[in-house]
Length: 499
Image 1: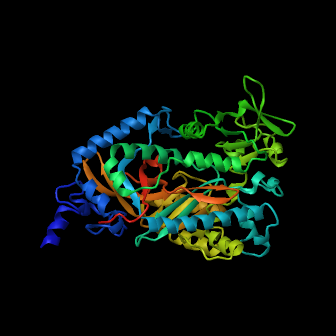
Image 2: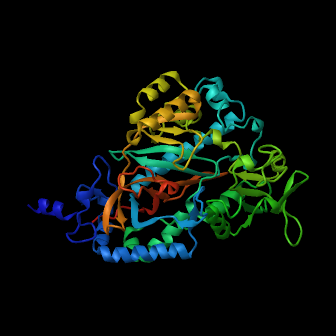
Image 3: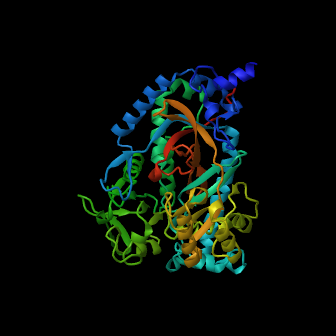
């Protein structure tokens, strides 16, 4: 009788914040906070404290959080927005919790993955042993849009290619963590991780203290250390290179430069002379040894890449080839985060490290392969089809929600350019309790997680947190901010706090 009453009134506390929460549960999903009507053991204390709030109290706290984000300029802009307006990244104040044991497994798996991907890039731009061994088809790599043959034979200063990475993870219906994709070029979003934390600590101080959460505010310091570790000289001068204020992630560029204590520069501020890079200052040219570039490599140097680029520095790649400047991330990384190369990462781990992968992946059909392509074309209505060179939720067909016309359009695209497409069965993403302002209720919404990994000369380090992105629309699987998604603060706990 007691259990039946609890189910009707919601988990933790009748009449509290989570009242009626299970009634809105998504079928077949793994709930991050609750196991049925019971808080998962590591999160019991946090759930009990949150449940004591009323919906009105949370609504007021949520409004304060959004005002703070706006006042602090925590914004992004969407390309194609005719008004050119900046928006706050939608933020749900209810945190996403990760148990200490869960994160320990993720940490080991992510470090393993980054070591293998780094070895792969060294090999592809070196001896190409993995191609000679037939582990990955040569045409898959040499035909990739992100492969830069002109970089073969170049060793990056400090021996690191993937200084900053963001690996997107999901949890399937039974709670298994799976890698969805790797972001090894210019991954964004970490500024929201730090800013979200400041707000949640301010508005939930008692809950935060009870949770015993790992800090994330030291990320800029660790990033600066990683950048300086690969400098070709001892007294390194590092800068952050931005395309400018019209870039969608400009807030993050300025945030990271400010918090690292580095200068934020644009292409006209830098000049190459004698295969060395200098920054123009009021006191004359100053040598630059490390560049954290947030400019796409296609625009980085008009002498090597796009000749029409006005965002690049002529001669930059000559300075890089001479070993006089480190670029983070290294040009050419795109071949390793190509969505059609992703299915081969487990084989990379075995080939380069002699280990079994610690993290699972999502089974992927590569349309370049005849058998996979036939299956995809016959099952378009059941699959998620992705263009390998798109991001942000663009270039995608959500088969189960698509129209016949949309499927026919993708059928033509796949037949015309099979190398450009992969497909996966839709994974039932895990869900988190999320505040839905228009209804004044807590409802489950699907989430993913982007942890950030910094790699220095000493190896990879995983930030104990990350960007939890949430699909705010009811029933949606799309978490990207450009497609209406939002974010949550990610609380990685130091130890079990159940009780």
